Image (cartoon, rainbow, N blue to C red; front, side, top):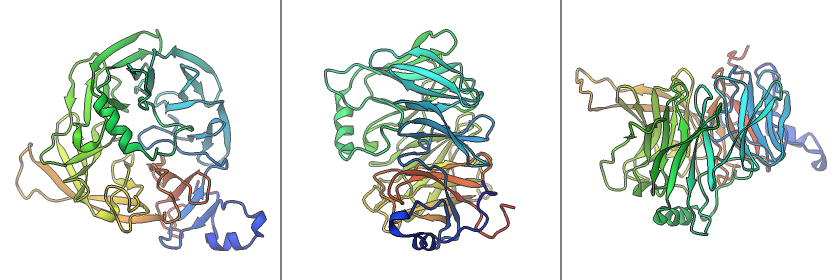
Length: 413
């Protein structure tokens, strides 16, 4: 991406250079408040990068999959050339980590399409009242849930897609009703080779946010959904139904935690913690192999709806939030880069203790013109030079990238 736009103009200059009727959304500019270069990656109004915990990059790291009102497209990260790969009303699941396949739901079935060759196959029909939300590391299993509904739609579990970018305005009320309903659910897997369906958990808790480990094909993370202060949210389970494990144990009233995601190497589950809700803010990590816990502290304005971590684990990013959200941040509408610093233990070694640390924040994008009813959903590009996000800052929704190195810093040569 760094080769495409060597000397972008400020956004205001670009807009003023054309008559009003002829103005098109700028392709690149320097954020005057941060000094970082921004690219508009997509050209289709209503297009978007994927949800923060959905892998949106092809296995070879060369392309980014994104959604459009017409279906699914793919973007070459070097040339920025885009092309459609799936047409029609579909709901994207994830991009494969082993092959060049993108997985999606269309007309009641799960499909895969190779983004290079276009080869498409139907993998399996969905069970009644069922959805699939994740594909495992070697692409041999799908994971999903079924729900028994008493004649009323409570927004069943489903991965975000082109028909569901904007959060419902009554989301809080809906979540309270759905949690209280205690609808019977099953957590299941589908073998992508044999189409065999296997139930691995039955529950009347609201099961949601299924996400396989990016490296261990037998380990699945999921959540007990609902208002965060009322649920023990984060869990893992093996694909044979064993080792059901609660990841986080609440220690105070109104402590909340959620928006969990895997580190790219699969060693750590990271998530947002607030102790208590809306007062003190952390990004917490749980090592699934050792049980080691690390918590990084951040300031109110730096709290973000979603966080993410780079492939090498050296950087985090966040998408900020407006004053109406849980942090009530007076100046939180920014895309952030965070560099983590662990606080030395000074000889105190107790494996049951949390390893504390702090985030050092850098603002990358001023999001004051963004309406946070659409969540930006940040991720790092595979080469770790860009933070990718979606935004309506120009009116329609597009996918954007901001360069981590400041413009003119020679890092992109």
